[in-house]
Image (cartoon, rainbow, N blue to C red; front, side, top):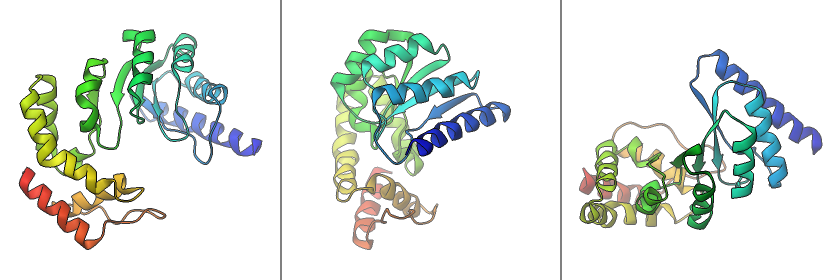
Length: 220
């Protein structure tokens, strides 16, 4: 097991150096695969990557790599090129703790499966932007939603939540892994198929795809 952990760290370091050599502007550091890790282990992993490159590093907190506020603060102190924190958990208390401790030291990005659901409260916490999965197949809707959030247009946000986001999330929540599958289905619905999901994920059923197509037509 120790060999596997070292291999993952070595791979991350190698890829970080390669990204810098290839002209990348920054690195999004995803969770190590396979298993859970202690906060100390996660911190060591991030530090190794930060030391390996001059690029700015953004940690992606989700799945098997959820960083608590103490760990993020330690990393911010010891890694000058740690520039951002992307949240894929949706723990408002944890985000409040992190932002209260670090303020503008980091850039904060929302990275939840349907980030629109958290856009309003997260904006108040200093998370000024987010990655929108919906943008892949409904870019104008995603942009309009974002503009409504930034303009504090409560009525516009509520209408878009009720008309599309909430029923979309209800469909997404039917099976584990549908956060990925539903985006693939959305691409097919709008005429830009990106192939099936990779195993062990499963695609939406034909009935579910038809439901999604109906939501997309109403949202356009």
